[in-house]
Image (tube, rainbow, N blue to C red; front, side, top):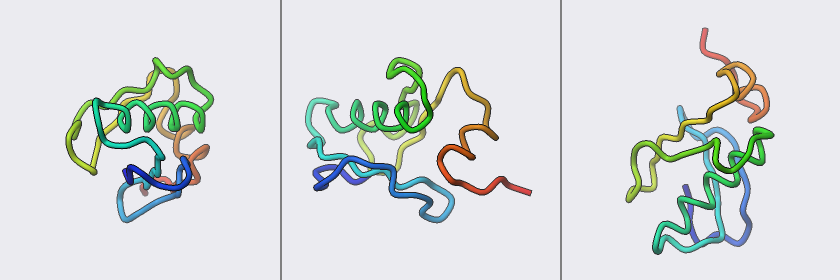
Length: 83
């Protein structure tokens, strides 16, 4: 996650992670909420369906998306499937 960016967007893969830029500052959980909203939008889900489950205070986060399988999420985010 890159807080305080000029634009809010899913930038694409960065190693084995996904780079998400958000314009929200990393204060009071605003950047985390923006990450969830951005991922939910990219996946075609409701905001409440995406949550941060690890890394709340770190730039490297783990998110959980409910209502979509891994293959569909990877396809919507432009990620390659592990072999």
